[in-house]
Length: 350
Ligand code: PMP
Image (cartoon, rainbow, N blue to C red; front, side, top):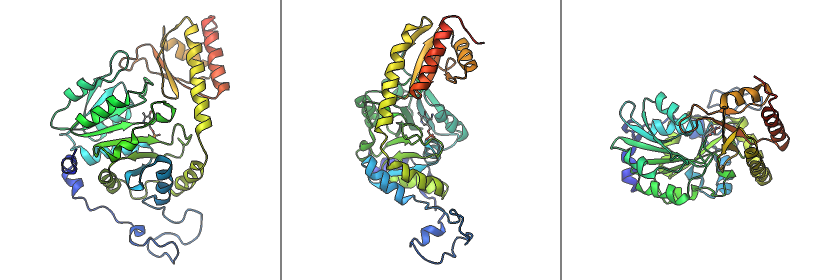
């Protein structure tokens, strides 16, 4: 897609927006007597506003992710990036988005909040990517296409070549949510944002990096898209504590924890089919398993009474009878399997 076609996708009011300019935009020197932002002069550790552009953090992430800082947006979780994409590209009440179904619920919620219609396209019976149907669902007012790989709640990653073909053939913005990509052997397509201006990749520190409580989501995209998202976001969307703490944690490697989770996923997936009430364990590239059982509500209630909380997805399209089970610590997975054993033996909590 050409830059001019990309610009044509943006809402007129956003293309011409004059964004808020913070005191820190006007003066950026490190030292001085700061009398410009009406802050308190008394040190609390947090009396100064944080960097609105998160420069230091983006430089650090640039090295880890192998992309220039100009191609990185940081949000209060990926959820902020999802909302901003609707606000940048979709005219409320007029434009629409296409999304795979089942998938992460926030795409539809953010769309509804922004008064944007979502056209849900079911995955194949085996959770395969319905590429043809996704393109057929688009019309002249379709701005965004939401894909998620590995997908939540099905757990599977789609073939990278199929995802890339959609980016090439879809005439709007393809949002590829890679929240769980660190757990997948298929890896990430984020390097492709330098090749395709209409590709936005979402990642998060909430999963493999273990920082869900700090709220840091990332979007990787063409510089122009990043600039638009940055113009629309709240000026100080990433607070000082998050910027500092994330910076420290990023210095620590995650490989060992990810490897343990992947090994535990294989262990739990191998143990589950031995239970008579388990009908199907779907292959997973994420840190959870989607499991189809005889009576999802009864098993959910049993696990809950045992103090084990899983997600009942049995009312989600294509997920009848399914529970979504996050992979925990080895000791937590032990407890899960012991509780399932008790359920099988009829020692059932209700
Ligand atoms: N994308 C997907 C696919 C998710 O499953 C989740 C959280 N469950 C998120 C994004 C949200 O990520 P964050 O914590 O960064 O808002």
